[in-house]
Structure formats: C-alpha cells, structure tokens
Amino acid sequence: MKKLGNKKIWVRVAVGIVAVVVLAFVAFTVVKGIGKSRISKNAAVKGDTSGDPFLYHDKKYHYNTDLVNILCEGVDRDTSLTSDNAVGKAGQADVLFLISLNTKTDEWKLYSIPRESMTVVRTLDEKGELADVQTMQITLQYAVGRNGAESSELVGEAVSEIMCSIPIQRYAAINFNAFPEINDAVGGVTVTVEEESYDQVIADRVKGYEVGSTITLKGEDAFTFVRERNSYVQESSSQRLLRQKQYVKAFVPAAKKAIKKDITLPLKLKNIMKDDMVTDISLSEMAYLTTAFSKVSFDDIDIITLPGEEVLGNKYKEYYVDDEAVEDMVIDNFYQKE
Image: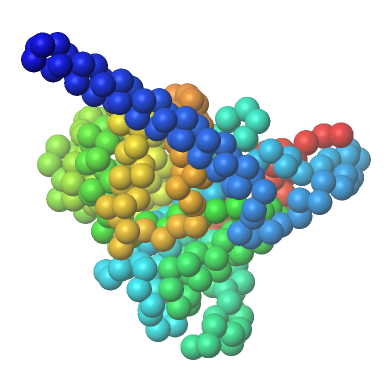
C-alpha cells in the first residue's frame, strides 16, 4: 500500500508539472498576442501614418501600417540610465539603429543612423521646457534629457524628422557598460577582422585582433570592439560604424541560438540590466518581439546606412544626410504603391 501511495503522489506531481508547463505556454501565447496588438497600435513618436495616398514621382503611395519601428541606442554614460540628471549630463547616443519589423510577414530591416548626423537638436531647461534649438550632431540630442526616457524620446523625434517623419513605436537605450554582460549572455560574438575597419587602438587591447583573423569577442573585448577608435585618424568614426554594423550582424545569429536554448533570455537580461537599460517595451511586447525575432533568417540581412557625406567641421566630424536619397529610401522601404 505504501508503494502504491508513493506512486499516486508522483503521478499527481507529474500531472501538476505538465499542467504548469501548459498554462505557462498558454499564458506566454496570450501575452505575446497582447504584445503584438499593443506595439502595433501605439506609437511613441507619431509620424505621418494617416494612410492617405499621395503622389511621389507620379506614383501613388501610402504608409505601410504593418511596420513597427524600434529605436535602439547605445549610450556612453558612466552612471545608471534610470537616474535623473542635470540637463546636458545624460551622456551621448554613440550608436543609433532603427529596427523595422513587418508584423504581417515577420520581416526585419535595420537602419544605421551615423552619430554625427547633423540635425535640429532641442535643448531643454531644468523644467523640461524648450530653451534653444541648434543644428548639431544627433548624438548630442540624448545629452539634454533629464532622464533616460526623456532623452530617448527626444532622439526618437530627431530620427523621425531625419527619416521623413516616420513613426517610431518604441525605444531601447542600453548603456555601453552593459555590453560585456549582453555579449557573454549569448556565448560571445564571433567576427572576422576586416581591413576597411581595422583600428590599431583595438589591436593594442584585444588579443588576436589582426586583419583576416577570426576571433570570438568576450567581455570587455566586445566593448572595445564597438566603442573604441583612434581619434587621430580622420576616417576612424566611419570605421567604427562598420565594426558596429559587423557586430550587430554577428550578434543576431548568436542571440537566436541562445534564445532557442532559453526563450526567456531577453526577459532575464531586461531584469539584470534594470540600471543599464531604459525602454518603453513592455513584457508582453517583448514576448512578441522575441518570437518574431526567432523566426527570421538574418544570414543575408543588410544594415542600411542613411545616405550622406561625412566632413570635418571646425572641431568635430559632421555627417550631412542626402535628403533626396533618404526620401527615396524611406518611400521604398516604409511605403507601398497603390
């Protein structure tokens, strides 16, 4: 009788475990559905999405409302992104990518916005009211926010204006300090050192970094690879952008592999990085994005840099986007023909 009783107990335990797993799966599916609905309908930066057709080069177009655009920022700041700060002390957005997801096809596209892109930068006072407007590098727009959320919204507005007023539904700003942890969470990122983006400063700090070599970046080496540059070399900023694009393309398959092993990884990272990340992406929206992310193949993904020209200003690099070329790019990728 005792053995039979133990058997019944274990059967109940097994049934209970299965029930919990099934409920968790159902809950995740429901949450995922809610996330897709919320992120599709609510835009943090509202652009021209009226859907009204218009003529462009004698052809009718309307905005593709299936798209969700998410601004990703790599912020250079020594302290927490979640704490309040004095205006001008929030750090700079040294890396700017816009992810565009088609919620109907699960297709992703990535757009790189050079940090030196010249745009209208709004300066706020201590009360958060507009104090001044100047044409400056977009990286400086992040600095004037009183907190990470305000800074990200300001940068989102600037990116939207550069890209012909497209809407930006969400943002995620990550402190560079968190890069080593994110990098190692996916098992490291493997890259091949390319001649066009080679930098001696990195060679002096990262073991095995030489043209043609394949290395797996771990910890601080990943941080060095995406951030550092030789400021005495004129093209070092554009070379760093090439490395950042290379890193993103290599990070994606590593992240997909890690998420397949643990689908809750993005949620765990969000919790771990609570002081090093500011985002308005909810847990339900993250569940949806994680699922959509896991479906797509990034093998041939192209990271599109906003077309323009880099010049040396009075003191710092300045990148002037080609307005006509950007408009063509936006029409081709964010709008549909009638």
